[in-house]
Length: 527
Image (cartoon, rainbow, N blue to C red; front, top):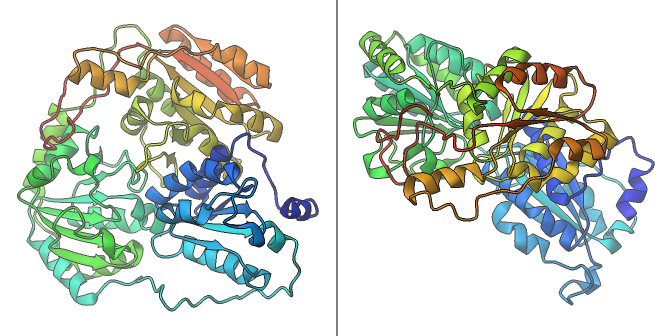
């Protein structure tokens, strides 16, 4: 309450969410879309612990965020006081750094340091826990303009010798592939990435976090790789002789079976976080530093062009042989819905997603040509992320159309934020791909558990009536020919809109690499 009393006289826009998890995801979405530091605020005890899922989500995806929590009086800490929780202890594994403020004289410095730590190096969330007696204390305001933390010195420029080695290896390769992750977007290296790809004529594949870091409609784009990546991206990785990894961490959803991953390839790994290099995959040439700086220097060091003509023909043949496809049988297919959203928005919307089949279809069927236009929970896989994240995106980018592509399961996990959207006039559009199931779990049970559907059949409310009860708009779509008009109507309404698309119940996401399988051992075929 002391902080809120000061907010009363402040020009800071405070948006009251209906659940603290929604606040954390909204701050996260704001940060991903704008590149700025998102901020969320919660009370002590359960308010603070409700933030933890959102903090963990930001931590896994390297998102700069400040979480400010209240705490009981310093004299009561450790006494199991009313609404006390050891928030710094709880969040230590899921924050880049956290603070418990014990002296009001340190508060300004701590806040300044928190923003600096969150936004530099490999970004991440920082938590500041402020006891109530500290909030009520007075001190002289001293704001440190410059921060110098002896134990924290991120490396921004790559080692010149390593960059020269990388340039030499690139020129000697015949089957190079660029593997781009979220670090490309964080560092603002997307123009340098495009220039490098075109200079060395290498195809580019992206992680889920890297989508938009390289234009999805570019002829060298292979889309996303990994468990639900394109077949041609996966085949290209497995047959390549050189992987140029930029701002990516070789997570298990990308590599599949590690001992079978890219058996013929040498690896150049560019990352600002030295702990991410050689953590999962052995690296031949590590380069620690900021991707934008390193790529600019690398491009200048490459004197010539490797001969990749035969390689590009092979990759093109895989594109022709293994295109993304689905069976058009007149029913509403989720892939078709996403294609229509892409066409209706001219590819210019910012897409957020929930987690599950809706997320993977969004990766596959919407083409992201610009960075910060695909906002999704990558490392943690947090259901309920997309809707509150869309709120944060819309606040940060008010002139952009923002679509949350959701499942009927995920959307119900933070559906209370409808009230926040309507009250604060945050007009986002939500496309609910309603199949009556927790779709991704059902897909696994179909493929690997003999269709023994356990705990996946969903009862859902009437989403149209629910949206209308909050003061939002709702649209029900039962037929394929209604899809495009419904999207057009949603875009024309100056309101938050829920579109309930009744899609094919047992539609699957393909291709799919079974858990623990080699990357080129995919379950393919028409979805």
